[in-house]
Length: 592
Image (cartoon, rainbow, N blue to C red):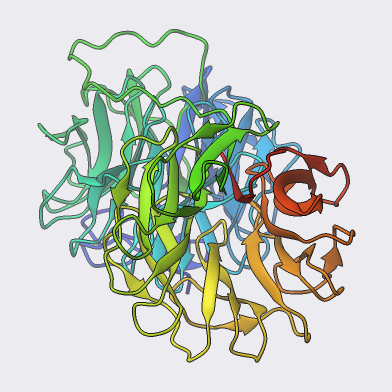
């Protein structure tokens, strides 16, 4: 039985047995009604989930419960609708392919499009306030983790990575934080984190279950479900977790709550009338009114955006941080142009070449964070090569590793929360991973041969790297915990410097299988290996642009000196970006 459908709760304290999608609600009074989902109000409409036609489908209706309209029509379960901020689309999970995947459709149910495709369950999608991203949680083999992807399904970024369950992500109104619930402290509590997966804060900290949280439209309040009074109720608290108040206060089970678009109303699900129905109440808990009346189970209320201005609430809103503008895309590289290796960056056209480090040591192997705000690199300024991190402008240079062996070739995870790197601290070069602040340094590979040059897949679940364990360097891939090492290339040549595309479908790498070093690309499973460059010079150090349309690389095709080049992903349009008498190498693209 799917974990998502396992956690069903009592609808009433009388242990009423309700069948939903062929599953039975648990009769234990303290079990959680997780099958209550969120409906959406806006422009007088509510989107919701119901099994009134025999299986779970998505419907919409007017705010007073009238004019119900079926939006999906499939034999599978379509659940958890969530509106885009412009109110024109609905994102939802469905198990029409066996496991739950994320789909998006127009508000009238047309143009249903699949966004995710993997073997795990992808659940509880939610648009970002600007509509460019979708947050969701994925049920992995180790627990539920939170991901973010572009609204078109591209470029997944894993934000949490642990053995507990992090679920039900929702964005803050300013787009700087994500609220979710997690059982990392033994029971479900409400947490927030920044959109890079860092700065996690526990808002509720008690022995009860607190879950299904969402920010009010003005960001001053958090709505959530909790069983802290003995049965599940709808609660509200300040955005910092203070002053929790029970709003529904009923002997039955009330949950699956969400705000109206203007923040004046709250939708929720209740079993107080014998089966799961949709209700609405004022934001202070008064005026609780039933909206649906039938023998089916109605679930999942959330609010369609409206052009009506959101009124300013009486309480003073909790200050939220100002969103950081997305940096202009740039390329980092190392260069010998000042007599020793230093880190530089430039615009993606090759203009505005700027020195970021300035010392007598060797600073090499820069890697931009995907968002372009940080650069991680290696330096021997403290005696041997260690991993450092700095801001994109070269400020705030901080040492992350301190070992007796060389630490080199660092690379960020797509979300920026992890860094994978190579270290000789245990006698030979192996792959390690650590948090972006240098904590929790963990060895992933253990082989007498050299394993080095690692790079994360965009979802954070895989790492590709070069290995000498087969007699010559080959490209491998493994799980992010170091298990399941798989060889992707197999020939007598040197295949090295692999890097994933932002959508995770391709790996670009260098190979000398054609007598000189050229850039190649292959599918992420090792198939369809294709040569992209073809000239007598050496072309190496390839990596993708953050939008996946370009590949930046190093070549000595002009007079034997190494410079930075860029080309389209099919190998066309090869263009020189730097033209300096010294070596320019190891380019890395950051910013979107």
